[in-house]
Length: 464
Ligand SMILES: [Zn+2]
Image (cartoon, rainbow, N blue to C red):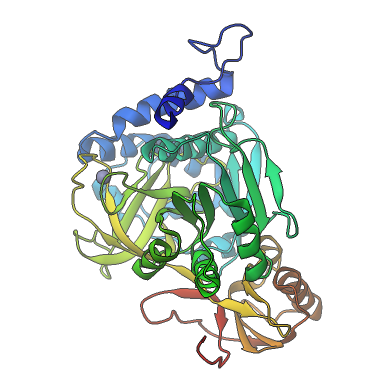
């Protein structure tokens, strides 16, 4: 029965009354399906062919960046760029890398002054990324269309039952009863019929999240990586189960093998992780047939570079550098993300898309409140991005009622800016902590390469 319903779901929704099949989709759905058909083919292309098309796409993007983005006019000229030239491997290697600090310092000069009208409206996203450096990234509708199409590809790869029930725990949910939506939302809703979604607020006590999740009893769960660990620990301690759960989907943080084992043990379900970042979108999806993540080469050119700047061979680990292929509002050309990844060899599934086997990036500990609550330490990147001098931050819990804010900044924050930071953190963590601001030249990564945006330095006795 499930298989039959799943096959019915593969017919798109029709926009024309009385014409259910074959469907006449809306213009937006038709765009998504047209891109999907191409993605369905390009995933099987040989790697060299995919790379060739990436470089062809870069040519108009570079011209646009050179002509309309003040920062790139100088940056590309210094690399010897001439408008209209081919972008080839040799030129590519000469192009210097960009860091988040470069972007932060460039300010408005990194934005296009003349985005093609046909690329649609521009929306802002805010991100603190992997290294705690807050920046704002404007994105066009055309870029969002590619982003959504890649998300749809991920759904198709993993052959989910779109009629099943999804639980989502993220920021912006309701923290008492949860919210109930009739469908899965973007990218599926509007193109295909789906089942319902229930959403709960991640900025709430982990025990309350667990109680809500148990009541909802979903088929799928979507949340942030480390929140899965916190929830599984609560379920295990209470002997609770999620009998219907088929799959856990994670975003936002690195998934350790230990997290996958814990999830299997407590919920009997596997984790399907998405490697993404706010500024560049979806970077890699787990292969549906093998271990490893496939780079979404149609959306971004992802490089993994060693110390000398050369591409890492399979089995080697290096810095992740991203070039977005379609965001004409704010092109990112060889942008160093702050993550570290290991390169994989050709995938046994036969797809030509590059493979990453392991990523190391942003991480966070759990915050503990004086009343005994434990929470996922969500921080609002939007509020922090508005505080101008901050180049990088880390919030550390040094006592049950005290946080130390470690900043790398262009200058000391004013009392008003410190207050804005304090209010943003208090609103998200749910307790009026005492604050201490300290200024550092650098904030080092933890052993293994993780960058902790929230670090617990409480001396807490081991559970049990
Ligand atoms: Zn594969």
